[in-house]
Image (cartoon, rainbow, N blue to C red; front, side):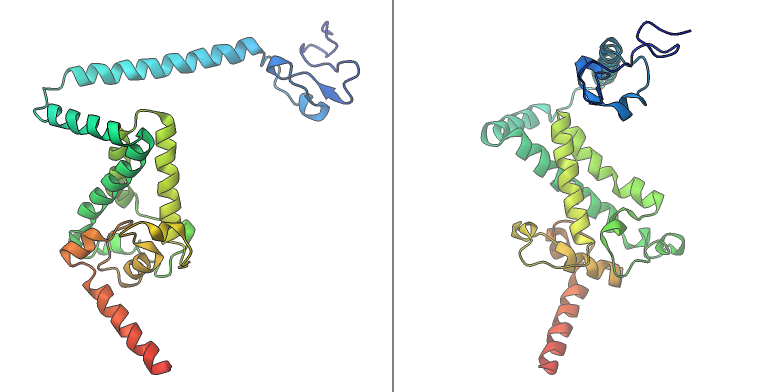
Amino acid sequence: MTSERGRPGLPGCVPKPGGAGLKASAPGGARVPAVLAASRIVGQSAEIWKMATNESVSIFSSAFLAVEYADSLLPENPLQEPFKNAWNYMLNNYTKFQIATWGSLIVHEALYFLFSLPGFLFQFIPYMKKYKIQKAPFGLEAEYAHPLETLILGTGFFIGIMLLCDHVILLWAWVTVRLMETIDVHSGYYIPINPLNLIPFYAGSRHHDFHHMNFVGNYASTFTWWDRLLGTESQYAAYKEKMKKLEKKTE
């Protein structure tokens, strides 16, 4: 059986006159190369694309309603009014992009450190310590972790998003910043002109390299203030002094 449009049994893909090897097979009449048009899945018309879009919107709407319903069951938060006033103050003085990105970064850093601080979580559990084998990290190693470590320490990554992000663009902005930061600190290279070094208290690759080399101390992944306040970078300070003395001897 041959269809009206010329393709045996499968309507929808025929060359247009004067197309110079192109076929109008994409929704909306877009012209694509003949070799791609021949491989096109038949039936992907503009109507089907529209239907899929409507279904996606319906799914997201249902999820939003489910969250709203769950929220209505929660008791009143006594801190709601102070938080609301603080939130309005930030909105009046900063953009949502700044609040979402920096807020997520700070929340994640704080929770990451607080979960990491008890040394027995990793230091005294051989089963988990064996997964921390990279003493000279590289960019891809940023994603190398035990599943339990990812579950516990990755919690802070999502809490900031849940508290501060109200749009998918803000979510992707935060994800982009976080990926840039974690790849940088695991790169194994210290680049003086790195713009991230301009951020106050930024840890950088040197600070985080020592954590992989020594395992104890330098727990912070992004900012160093927790390590400085609680004295968990004392071994790193001693290590830097030792390296300075060695450099002077070699001069």
